[in-house]
Every structure is written in structure tokens, then in C-alpha cells.
Image 1 (cartoon, rainbow, N blue to C red):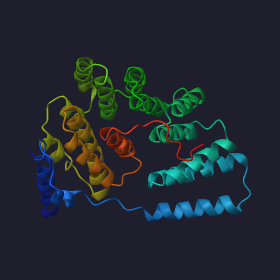
Image 2: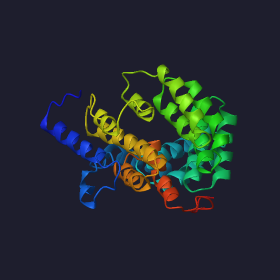
Image 3: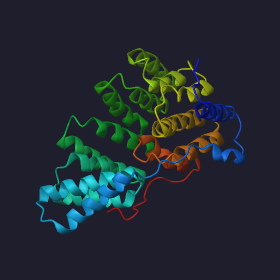
Length: 299
């Protein structure tokens, strides 16, 4: 049982329980205010972006230094949701340093988000050619293949990603999600086989446990409060749990509930999380919108 130690915590718990009670019906619009308070842009990030911009404009830099600073600023832009500015900086970094695997990884992510999947594969391939042990390139290439409707080709990448850190619950969940598009039975078998490798004390282990039927939706939402240390951690956990609940409801043929959860993911403003990155793309899929062919000025 969850121990509620303060009135604030009790209120949060009540709100989460209220949300979980809407599992089989579309939440009313009057409940929209239950969404957690969006994270604000950290003041230090704003200052860091301003400082990097000043250095890039005024300092005499080597190509190596310019590449690193453009990349660093791109990461900061990306972390606060300024995607267009971020990808421009990643492309600039690659012009100065064409062998920067980190930049190729981010470029691939942005190609995926804009539906340019062939370019995304090329970017991730480049990252892995430069750094074969770049584990997140396997995740991101697998995700690109998954959203392109090629889950069968995505599975090996997600399996490789899991093998590098088999105790990571998020890797277990992503492999399960992708495998489910190929074979629900195989995905279920894999989930059951991978669960014993996870740390039972890690909060995130509750997510694959939920997919395995060990927790109810209400219990998963309640678990967000376990060892909670502050509002940022709450927003991060809700960003994650809302995304995976949305995926689950979608699999249960409840698109309206999935859509509501994806909107709550976006409302957290945890821009750098993979769940936040792809929530809007998931919403486009639910609406039946085409994901390919959007250049968005990226070239």
C-alpha cells in the first residue's frame, strides 16, 4: 500500500486515481485541469543558450570547437522544445565535423519526427559506422523503422539495445511494443522472459509489470508517487506513464482514451524524453495522418 504523508501528496494521488477511473470511457473535458503543471524552461538553460550564442558569434573558434558548441546549443534547444533551431545547429555541427556520431543521432531523431524515414536510417547508420557501440542509435533506428511500419526490421535493433543493458525496464517495454506489431504471442513470451532481469526496486519496473498484467492501471498511476522527491520527478514519471498507458489503451482498441493520454504527455513539457518526442507522432497515427514526406525545411 502507498503511504501518503502530506495533503499535497494526497491530492496528487486523488487526481491520479480519478484519471485511472476513466479507463473505459473518454474523460470529460472538465477534467482537463488535472494535467500536471508543465515544466518551465530552466533559467540556467536560457543563460547557457545565450552564452553559447555569444561565443559562436564573437569568438575565434576552430572547426572542432565550433562543431562542439553548435552541438551543445542544439542539445539545449532540443531540451526546451525548440526543435527547428536544434536541428539547424546539429546540421551546422556536422558541416564543421562530419564524423560526429552524436549529431547524426539527433539528426536521425528529427528526420523521424518529420516523417523522413529514409534519411533517418542513413543518419543512424552513419552514427553506428562512426561509433559501433553507440547504443541509443540502435533504439532510435528501431523506433524509426517502427513508425515507418517496418516493425519486423526494428526488432533486431531493439533486441540489440536491450542486450546492452538487460536490466533497463524501458528497453524491455520498447522491445515489447515493437514485437507486438509483429507477433503478440512472441512479444508476450519475451516480456515474461525479460522481467526477472529487472530491478524490483526501480520505479520504472512497474511499467513492464503493468504490461504483464501484474498491476492495474490505477496501481500503476499510484506508483508514480513512490519515493517522489519533487515536481520535476513527478512530471517526468507522468510523461512516461501517460505514454505507455496510451500505447496500452490503443492496443485495447480504445483510441479516444489513448489520445487523451498522449495530450497529457505533451502537457508535461518534458521535451527531452523519448515519450514526449513521439507522443505527437502517435497522435498523428491515431488520426490516420500520413507520416512520410514532410521536409519541414530540414535539408
